Length: 190
Image (cartoon, rainbow, N blue to C red; front, side, top):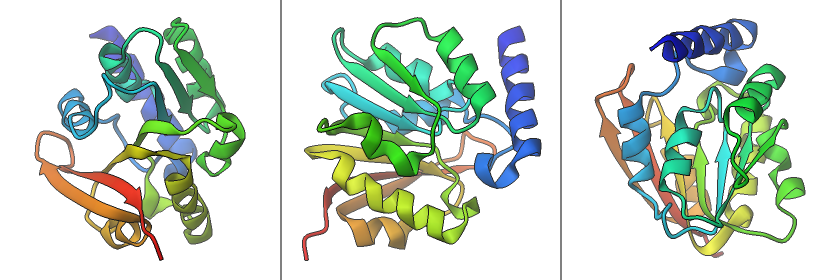
């Protein structure tokens, strides 16, 4: 309980310092994280990528679902939160990277993600940055991979549909505010 309160205060501090970058006042609820991860085959994945790890609400659940020998590359742009993640998750499967999601390719090399989990506040990001990050996603994904995204509105649906052949979504009311969960597969072929 104390860790949960401390995490909320850290997250709030990160929000106050840079609200457009963080995009939410509280970390995502455990129920919403579980609902989002149910949209992808995390247990079968060899490589999972997490964008916007925050205090690790998603990270913890991803690790609980991952098989031994799988790898998790988690990106967090806030240096204090990245340091917290590095200290909190002493697991050989985890690589914490303090960088912007737009630079994802530099951290994957030739590897492709089987599952890409994103909690980035796309609607809060500056338009050009948002487009650069979204444009990286299809190329970072394995051919049969899935991108799962949590948002607090349906506003990103058209952007996802421009980049992925299949986009499904559902709402989880057990988050404050209620969350839109997107599952995206297969790049759009021109």
